[in-house]
Length: 215
Image (cartoon, rainbow, N blue to C red; front, side, top):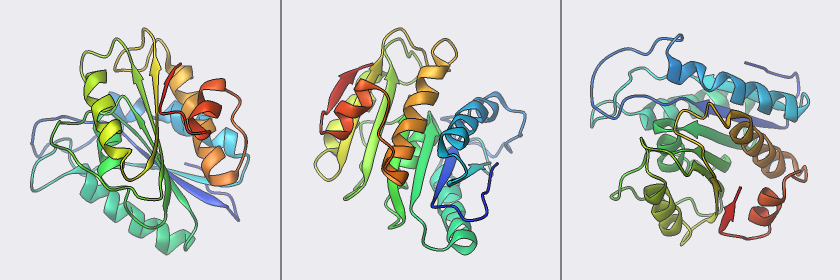
């Protein structure tokens, strides 16, 4: 995506996929992949040549015991270390990519995680001790219920600093309120990796310790 000569941090952007377990390969033209392009671009602009932004293309669409996006993320973090050394990392994922970021974000280099409309299950557990976490969820999401990600955020708050922002009227695809999701992701990443104060009152409240904010 964008790799400055001397970045101060790294962002890995994770796309969504299918909740069912299958072996279908991922295409770069897939809508769930393309949906994250503007998010990655917004982060790159906000980073002002201080952040290396990479989009991960998963090996398969599905999520099962043999192939999960968490495995792809682990590989990607190894590549980040090989390429950029021990720079701090932020993960930004949508839907199942958000789930992968939350469940696979325990790597010691990961400084922060942004989950956009994450598709999570009641059984999901994660220990992101020492990591700043932001969950942004549309109130009209019918694919990944807001209640599930809110419950997950409450469980995660036992070991991590977690903020939850609800976006009124937003749906799963992040189309109608896309710029809102993009802005939250970019501002949280630059705040946690670069120390740039966020422009939105919602994120200022989250970074000050608020657990739930209406966006």
